[in-house]
Image (cartoon, rainbow, N blue to C red; front, side, top):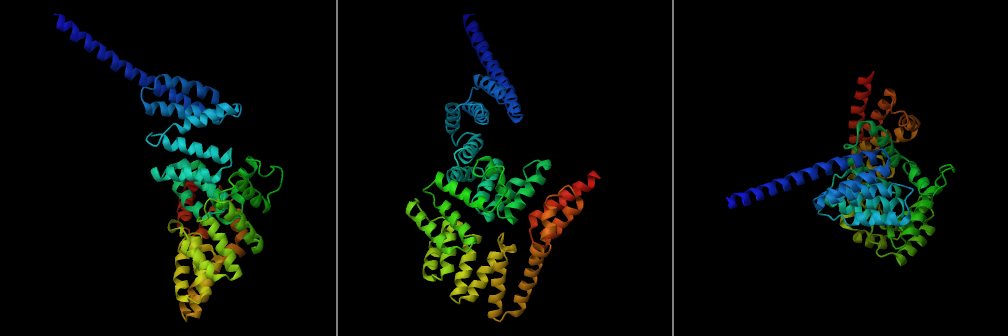
Length: 416
């Protein structure tokens, strides 16, 4: 009899534990859902209250991480919070390790704070690269990387991460996102206005100008003075203005102050400047030192120019062909012109004529009909404007844009 009582007590205790566990789990999920809803609506105070309540029912580390993530986000997004509370929230995010299922969200939030509040662009990018290695399709990571690549004058890097994230965003947000991508690829600085004014780098009441770009690059350099990318970006601005001497002076300063200069943006500007000077021996050394994992569009373009300059035209042709297959190669008139010239000099007249014909198609869109295209991107609600853009992207061979616009145009038709 006594044994039965003991067993019964144990069973009752076990049942109570199970009931308590499931009850706590139910309460946790309910409170965390409420917290997330408040956060989405910008109700940061109530979001924190619900997140703290969820913490009381968090019986696993994973659940604690989820609640702390919402709590930290609601604190960091609240402009009424004091500096110490913001710092504590950031430290809480750091406590969420790579083994946690919410680590990508926590790390992306840390990167956002580094970028927007501390202007530590390279620090944010390294953190996002770490997240991307673990979770390649993480939406917020790809969106932040897209922003960083735009801000640091790397449209060829911005393009692929944009399309990775684009398919995941809600349909009603896609037209604005598509327009932002367009600005990042076809204008000098159109995609960066919000960041420049939001961070105070450029006064909101001042008309946009090309000078905004260099002001941002200087701000980045001042925040991270030992990062070569910022000297490379600054030099690229001066190279665009054909000021090679000034660019080289900036690059020299970068070499003296940076931890390492074996970095794509810095090397690209330095090779560009040395090619302008005709210093081909040094160019060859730098091309050989270029990091293997960064040998994309910029590397191929410079390699082709070097090969052409030392009369290695057959090699230059192959390099330029690879280059125009990588975005933004299809719209780079200089690369196409050089390819056509090398083909002619090698006696490949028929192929040169084909290149020239495609180059003329691209030129006519980017020059003669550009006003029509530029206007169309601001009228994505208009079926005719979307048709113009579809024709444009078909002509230049941008498959992802054509696919989206075809789908979007069908949606507009369905709404009529």
